[in-house]
Image (tube, rainbow, N blue to C red; front, side, top):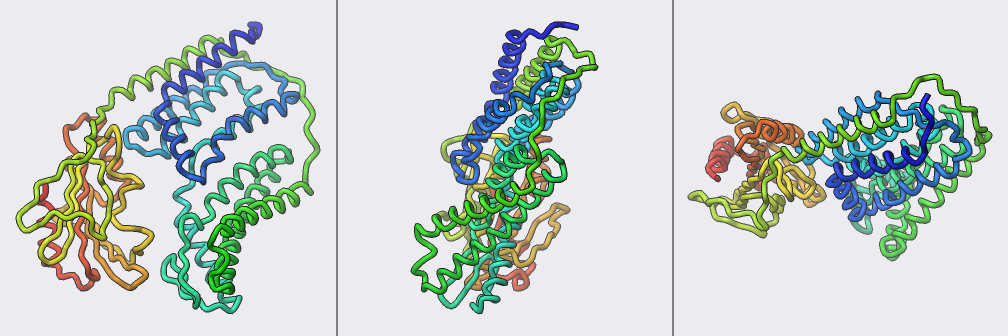
Length: 474
């Protein structure tokens, strides 16, 4: 059995960390930008420091020695493949998770199963570096709106709900994304996970506490939103929506966390004692595991640079305006799509608005499917009904939209990647991945037309004519 050499091991560990950082640097930059831009994820800066502190705090319980193993590297290959697909398609969820999980598996491979088990939670805790959860905003907003309406009715305040807008005698309130409670929920999970690790030893207590954290966070946010509306209603909007809005929110968060930790501490388990380390499995040679891990990283780095990236101009060029259309910008319809190669927003003599935008399958900045590009303003318009129609055997989506003022619009749109057409953002992403892997010399496009009428009132001939006009734009 080879003798453990600390200096050599720490040098190899440092080399793996540097190699991982170099390969996944674009993803790390993307994650850090989200941390910086969103208050929901500012706690992510602290996650590596908390993991390091947890290792130091439980250092007396770490008795095993590193015994490298090759098996986790098989999963690293899968993670790097997923990361490459996410990188090609500009899907942050895939790139962020696969990058962090790749790091965890690389470290596990060098540490071995026994030592990996003893440091499992600090290693797992790195997953909170990933800015995840944005997809939960819409359902959390709906839950908050439903609960607020119910509580307001119970308190005797009349309320009318239209989508995410709540109207009371004193005014109208919007359950915006900031009111969804996502920030509260994610911060609670990050803090609660550490508390659970330091407090409990039994798995069912960990599970029960974390489920309670989720439930308490959602319920508490519903009461927070209700009380803010109630305070605004009873004070004739004198209180509840100024600086005191934020003070009240943080006070409520602190109170709920204190209550959860106080209740959770009542069921704390005795602290564990160090166990003697018993290693019965023959380890793989450290240099072999290191070389295999670095080879995977080098191959991933090389494959990343095989992907063709389109250089993006500072401003997209204006597409040719077909006969019968007038180029128009600055209208109430603001769908985005300003960071592509070509763009045209136009209107015809009947007031129908048109949008055409062309992108590279992967660009050095900007993307076809992204949070900045919305075919309608989701905060102002609500989808009342949707249909899928076929034009020359290709799909076109129809959405009937309504705002809080009772105005209606009908939106027809589709995405085209090369010769493939879809109405699904996810499918469009997959088509872009295929086009890049096959090295196709084509482009990705979005085409949309907006009518100021209800879907039922839109004559089929009018719709067909507008879609035909949309096809002429290049």
